[in-house]
Every structure is written in C-alpha cells, then in structure tokens.
Image (cartoon, rainbow, N blue to C red):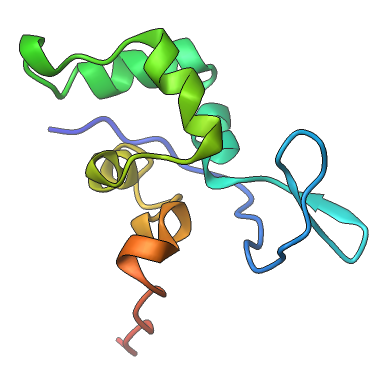
Length: 109
C-alpha cells in the first residue's frame, strides 16, 4: 500500500513566468512548481527520496543527487508513482504536461 500525504493548498500552474528559484509567478503572487510541492508534502528532498525508494526494488533505488536534479524537470517514468505518493495532490498532468497533456475534466458524481 502506498503512503499518501495530503496537500493543504494546491497552487495554480498556468503561468509561464518564473522567479530565480523556479517558482511560478501569477499576478505578483509566487506560485510553486510541482517538484517544490512534492518536497513540501514529503517534508524534504531526503524524505521524498525515502518515500519513493520504499516502493522500488533495490536495483531501481534512486540517489539524493537524482532527486535534486528534478528541480529542472521530473522524469516521466516517476510521475505516476509520485502522484500516488502525494495522494493525487500533485498530478502527472502538473508534473509533465508535455507528456501527459492536460488533466481530464472531472466527471460529475
């Protein structure tokens, strides 16, 4: 069973403006990237790595250096696992819209 963590405030991701730290800026309000949200949910990059590695076989374990490089973009092959770990708070569509496209519309219950 995957460990899930809830995100209290989900930021908007539809601005193309970024600050020096990679955060998105929308109307003067700094927004965070999906990677920054994942780190905040986990508590740290080290804890994010630990959560990921808990779901991977020994031969596929990732290093701290690999995770730190994700600030430049999260690998597509990690997005679905990260979406599950975040409990859906950060989706594959937010992490890699170039691969997964836009999120499907929510269906009425």
